[in-house]
Amino acid sequence: MDTAVKHAIHDAPVPRQPTLTQRITAIAWPSVEDDLIQHGSAVMPNLLTPAECETLVASYRDDALFRSRVVMARHGFGRGEYKYFDYPLPELVEALRTSIYPHLVPLANRWNEIMCIDTRYPAQHAAFIERCHDAGQLRSTPLLLQYEQDDYNCLHQDLYGEHVFPLQLAILLSEPERDFTGGEFVLTEQRPRMQSRVEVVPLRQGDAVVFAVHHRPVQGTRGSYRVNMRHGVSRLRSGERHTLGVIFHDAL
Image 1 (cartoon, rainbow, N blue to C red):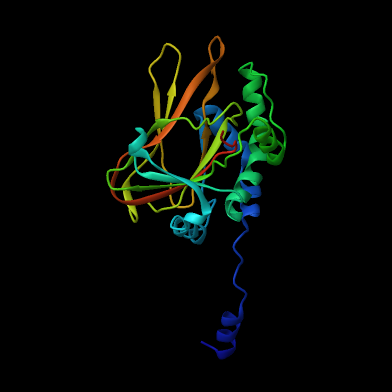
Image 2 (image 1 turned 90 degrees about the horizontal axis):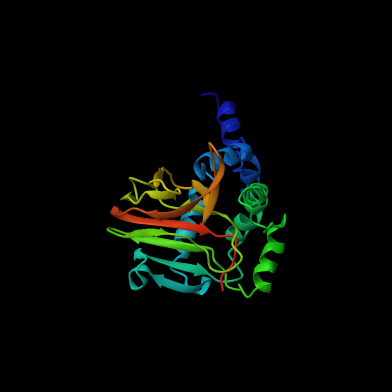
């Protein structure tokens, strides 16, 4: 290869990784809304980079970042454990919470209108958190979850108080088949006078899934009706799995 060509290749600028804000802005939000309306969940691939995922996983060992640790088996929640971040949140977690919330507000308000729920959500996350804090919901809710072989998370809802934002986010920080096997993210939908519907959401490292926290409207032949949503994680067959949970309301 010509020496000048070698130098040109060596000196070529390395493409910059899009910032988190750029990645969030680039999401096809109308498609996310469509999936949430149709299925109660939507996947946003590659929201976090592998390096960001690994940094969050490593942070699990730093107890100074967290306000509490929960061992699931002690409370009948399943097996495994998780830790709630304390305020101030890590910069990445705070950015996810405040930057994604405004994109979800229009659908959250539309769902409440359809379900005849009076609550409407402000356009910016800071105003919603102020509402939570005024009601005594002062404790932060973003969390890191850790699962090992045979661990699982029972079906549940993350409610925490009177003020609940109806959508939340989970981001897989580990790589399936490399770091763990099993451990699928699971959603169930309990429909009135019908059997429950189950959905397994496939995720790779850095993928996020946004999903309904409690209930959502579904269009039926006689109009809309309300379905009850729960989520959990199936049993890990091997390895170790970490997840970041981003809940937009705070806890009592």
